[in-house]
Each structure stands twice: as C-alpha cells, then as structure tokens.
Image (cartoon, rainbow, N blue to C red; front, side, top):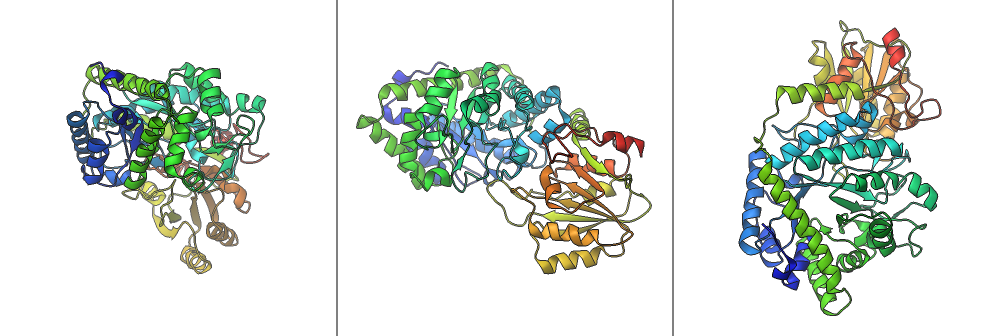
Length: 546
C-alpha cells in the first residue's frame, strides 16, 4: 500500500515521528492513548512487555490492529535485541544469539551475518520489524560504563566489517537495522543514562575511528541510525549533545556522510537530555537538529507533553512544516518497504529453534572463547570436585537485567558429568560475604571464579574475593570473565584467565568445555587488556601444547 503525507494532518504527521513504550503485556490504556489519540508511529518493547513468545506475538498483532483502525498506518515495532548481554527477550523458544564482543572475538563476518539472520527471523515471527542494533561504537576506553561488550571491538575496521554483515542479515530478513550510537559512544567514561559524556578528539581522529563504521553502514544501506547523547566539541562547538546538534545530525550525518535513512534519537528520558533540557524541549531541538524519530520510552505524561510541544512548535513557526514532511516521508517509505518485505518473506514459526541453529550457535561460541593466559592449570581434573563462584545480578541497571532463568557455569560443567558445586554470590559483595564465600570454598583443590560486571570496573567485593582465594595454598584458581574482558586489570596476578564476554548458555557451555579440555578456545582478544595482552592476543597455542 502507498501512503502519502497529503493524507495526514499535522497531528498525525508529528505522531508518526514518535516511538514510545508502555508497561503492560496487552494493549492497556497507556498504549491506547498513544496509538488512538496521539497516533504514534512506533512502539518500543522492553522486557516488561514479554512473558512468553506467543503472548508477545499476540501483543504485536493487537497493536497493529489498533493502529490500522485509528490511523491506517502500521507501526514500527522496535526492540533492543542486540544479543548477548542486552536482550529484551530470552524466553523459551528464542535463540540466545551472541553479543557483539563475543562475535568480535570470533572475528567472522559470516558468523555476524548468520546470527543477525537468526535474530531477524525470530523477531519477525513476533511481529517486531525494527531492531535497535547493531552497536557500531568502537570500544577503545576500557573504563566505558555503558558500551563495553556491546561493541564488536576497539578496531574500527573490525566493527565496520562485522556491523555491516549484521545489518545485511537483519534487513534481508525484513527487520530494519539501527546502527548506534552516532557519532560514537565507545570512548566515553560516563553513562548517558545518568549524565553527559564528551568525546574530545579532533575530526581526523573521529573520521578514522568513531565515524568509520557508520560510514560503512551508510554504504551498506542501513535503514536507521540512532543518535548518542554525547558531546563532540570538534563537530559542535556549543557543547550540545549529538542528539540535539544540527551540526552533527544535518551537517555531518545528512550532508557530509550522505545518509538518507531514518535518524532516530536515543531515549530522551535519559538524564543527559531530560535533566538538562527537559523532554518536550529536547524533542523540539532533536527535530530541529535533523532527527526523524523521537524515542520516549516510558512515561505517558512525558510522551504526550513532547508530542504536544512539537505540534505547537510547528504551529508557532519554530519548526517548519517542510522539515516535518521530509521526516514523515522517510518514515512512510520505510514502513512501505517493510510491509512489502513481510509479504514476500516466508512466515516464521514462533518459538522454533532448529537443531541446525543450536549447533551453529554452539560452534560460534567455541570460536569466541578467548584464553588470555594459562600457566599449566588447564584442563582441570575431571575426577576432582570443582567449586564455581557464580556472581548473580541482584539489582537491575539501565544496561543490565537479570535473565528470566538462570544457567550457571556450574550447570555447564555438570553437563559434562563432573562434580561442580555452585557457590552463588552477589555481584557486589560486602566484606562479610567475601569471608563467607572464601570459607565455603575451603577444601576444594580446584576453584573457578566467574567474574561479572557491566560497569567500568570490577566491583570491590569481587576483587577482594579473588585476592583472598589467591592466598590459599595448593589450589588451582581459574578466573573466567563472564562479561567484561578488562576484569583482569582489577585482579591480582592469576595463573589462568579466560574471557567469554557473556554468561549466556552457549558461552557457558563452551567455557566449560575449554576448562575440561573438550573445546579449543579459538577466540582472539577484540580489545586490548594491557600491553602484555593486546588486541588480537590469544593463548590458544599454549592451551594446545598443555
């Protein structure tokens, strides 16, 4: 079906420019107001919207029916399903596809492409037609608190190769990819959910590193690019975040880099925007800067206030109707293309993960596990009991959520038939909890410590725990970094250090296989841990020679 802006009122046009979220498993009053009264162009799903896969598919269908009745335009149904540690859907029947850094360690564009295909097919079966992925941030700051393993690598060439492969995989399967966070959130030390970050580099450096993957994504035909709430003084002298900067979004992205797709803001409820400018003013400024779609993820009052503010800004002449029309034309063109693709592609069965897919994902996991060092401790002795220190996330953050079900490294070791005893701890332990964990580990000759953090440094409790365990005599201590590969920099010297980049089941199974000599760790470091362990490092040869 062909939709044209001539059919739309001002209110409908502005509504199309907003992607909003709501907290329910079915279309509640919040959703009805967004779609019926404000005629928003898209809905963004979070984990709060998912109980089961059939329920999510039914929600998608219900929302689209609601939209077709009120505005005759389909919705962009979007989600952050990056893979790995950022996945809104991890429920029964969904493939736990790997995240970017795990793919970066495997180093295969073909793997990235096939993983994106799997993810896209499953999302499309659930009615989702837009994914806020892949991250094209180049993670060259080890203390980055928000990107980390969401990045493929610190090497912009690798990020570009794997990112464009993922974009191709998503879009060939009928799901619009969204490259993020433009112009690059990798070299920051502030989480923009909580405050304003800045990237101080000059344009030569930005073009060579931060901007390079986005330039390649544009050449690859990416449907959408998401903005970063980050300041770039070399591009925007007034200290505005990129999301609100005409110099960044129009001057650089549109005019210099030639991007013709959708520019989508990151959520305006993040503090870098909401605390400094307010969400209604932020929405107006983002559209002035060149954004086509404004993302307001949570609060109905903020969503409706922002939409109303934009309508009033057009009526007052602050925003030109021509600017609005150009954005809406892009949105309608993408919706039309997605609708056409959906008709052409085969219907996907909900919750069907084939054995072929499972085998492929297991193989990719093996290709990504990286042995950084081993001083003769691997493989572990299968006939002896193994204590597994397993940190569990007890408090969710903006970039970290507890999984719907737990699968530990101990579970993975037990699947190989060995005695592995889980000693569960919190990710941030008190001194008393550290002492309790050390006491529980006494008597074991083999201890595997799984470290975990989504933040810029390993929590002090986990650091203290490894220090205490390292003092035990006659004990083999193996550290497996189950998210952040930089954990090693916060630990005492350890004899064996392994990186899995995520604690998802495929990667825990592969890590367990490495610990027991059943899987060869083929991964190479996609980031530099230190001068001793640089980008591309692998202890693979030492492992093979053990």
